[in-house]
Length: 289
Image 1 (cartoon, rainbow, N blue to C red):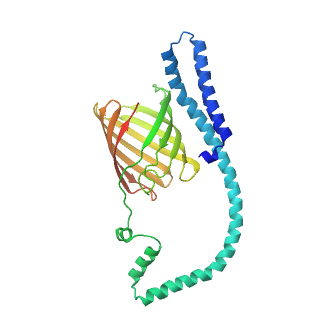
Image 2: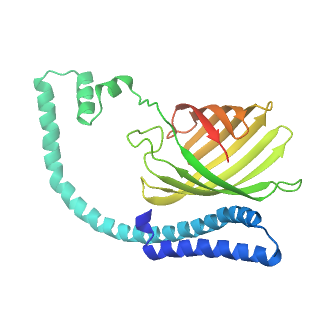
Image 3: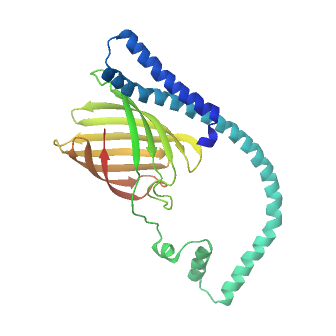
């Protein structure tokens, strides 16, 4: 993301954060002249997340605008490349046909059966014998490691739900995996709404995100969540969560709250659409401060 944000913009962002915090603290001191150092510190902690979130959103919009301009330039370049590609394909088609014929001739010399030909072609495409035999790809290991700062700006009442905003970072601890974990840095900014009912607590949240792997800002994760407290230590959780229209999964989870600031969770993700991971069991620890 750093290449999309120049030095002047980063400097502006830092100045905006400092100015926003200073203005908020200044107004609070003007309204309450006798504030102690501890009270000023608490006010600073409550103000900093919302200021950083606001500046983060502004940066996301700025980056999105630059990306749109880059995309328009890329479209023009792709049109030129398309014309050149048509000429190249016409020249290369005869060579590719010759390569295909050479492969067929060699397979015939080896007297390969139809099934053996299919395996050989898959090997030429780069698949391993284990992947070909299994027919599926399976991975296990450390999953996502995330850090989230959440700020509640509207408390729940009888007439409206709680509203909160959050900033999240996902760490790239699985750069060599394909299905589990995260392969590059991800940053998310979002908003959510929570409402308590007699049958449990419902939450809806959505976000925008920047993916270091793809190098662009895009619509992020969205989810409908349900949480039910069974006892002081045990809770059950369910969610419909997705990142695209064709990447939606059902998550079921059991939580054991062994400490007031930490709990153990055992969950499973079941893919509901074609591009979602088919089955993704996880075990993890969630800590809050």
